Length: 74
Image 1 (tube, helix red, strand yellow):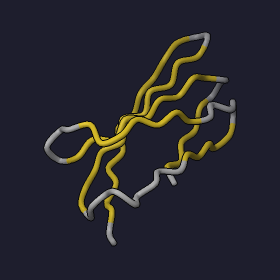
Image 2 (cartoon, one colour):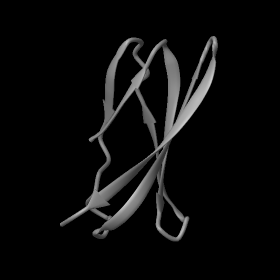
Image 3 (cartoon, rainbow, N blue to C red):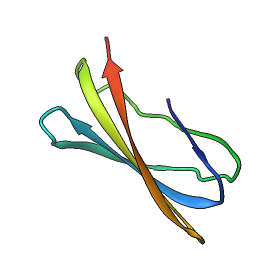
Image 4 (cartoon, rainbow, N blue to C red):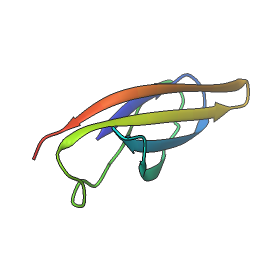
């Protein structure tokens, strides 16, 4: 699960990259205002390692982004 918070209703895109900078997958997440939102990342085809999630949210009053480091251990 990847969890994030948005202040207002937003369109959320999450891009997962490996340590080499290669795009692993792109996820569309919910963007409910004023609460934690979660999206499931299916790890069945993913190896153990460190990944980066680039979270982009675009709402009516603007946009924002964050990068989260994720350690996958199988």
